[in-house]
Length: 251
Image (cartoon, rainbow, N blue to C red; front, side, top):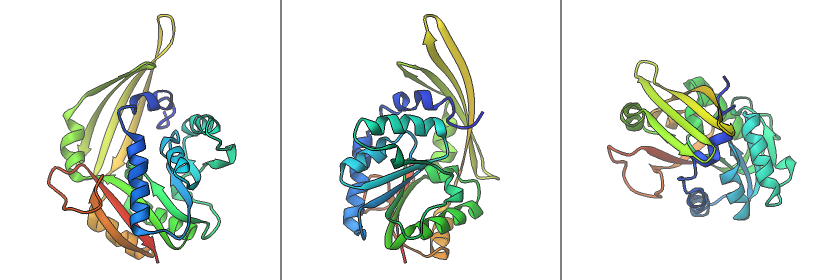
């Protein structure tokens, strides 16, 4: 089954423990700290649009793109409630961006979307596409899982998440030779009465070492401005850091 096809139905409930308001404020703070040549913002892998909408409320002119039609449908419905039209959402794979050249001042890929790329070549392709979409001096912000999280946190499951709409049971294995964490999800979604429907999805995320990311950014016309533990603007990376935040500028 395609990733996020059935998970979309539970995604917002399962992610309710994540403070998306704080996440949006963090991104906004980074943009203000490093400076961007405008307010037009591309949210890559926007999912159900929670962070996109938060950034719109902070004054950005947003476009959210995602390859999951199920996630985008939820995003579009949520967007209507805050004045975002259907043209604020676009079905598109980040590996095959088709956007007007130099049309955005900022590009964001939050919630480890970059880890869904499967190889260094795909990473290069995405950065090349984003360079085309960003105007000169534009900012690129994205976060990724660390090796510590891939090797030690994910495989420590299985994990069970409960929401009003259903349950998600997931376990992960990390393949060091391939650099991939494979997440196997079993979903139980409540339909009506005593009827529950079971779905299964598999998600694969790839580990990108900091040196690989730095090289790919430089090779595709970006200057790396910052690589810090997520939630910080400065400070060192500790052995137990689970997520890194990158900020780069299109040269």
